[in-house]
Image 1: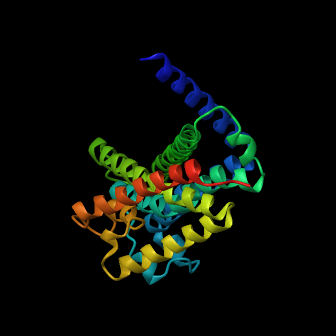
Image 2: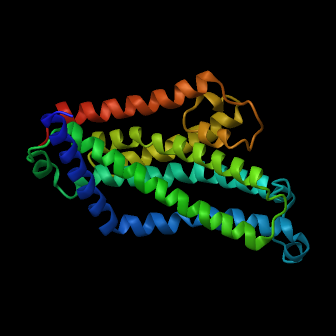
Image 3: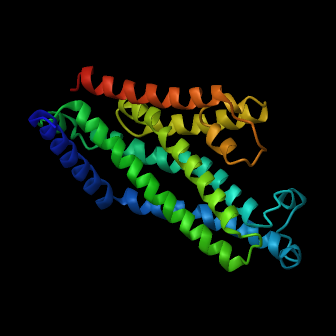
Length: 266
């Protein structure tokens, strides 16, 4: 490693540490941590209803539509958690990305940030790394709570193979959802705040749900994580799905870096 490369790595590490401290000390960390708890809570509640239907039918809490969910064992339980994290993650991880980039404009710290003797590319990369790290921490936390809830509910079919496959699928769905945060960051830069990226997130969720209903969700990047959970059946994704997903993510990353490198700030 050359002296220049070593200097760049030190600057990147410093930027990551600074961005991490800003995120942890903010209210965002508390809000997102509490929000991610809804994932195992909602799925666990539905699983409990399916496990003990007679108790909840008497209370009028189980409808015919809910009975179609069939969360009756570990396989379907983990599959549902993966689906919920895919949809909920678009909101939670996207909100994290919008805050990390948008706060520089709302707090009017952009000019001071760019005055530092650090490459703009390094600053952008550090922000994306922190977003990914925090999103993975939230996801692991949700998964652990989900595994604990499933054990307390007493779900059947919890072999090591089933658990491993479910956790692996959860990891893929989480990763697919996290990499979709790059376009959100771009909209935070374009809109110079929180409103534009949040509107974009809502649009992508509605668009992906509509696309899935019309059976072309496998080509919509924001619908792919949920389809990867296997909730709608196997072999729904193809090479075009992967190209669509990573294409949007890479374009979002490149466009965000380009914006920071060439845009004027006042």
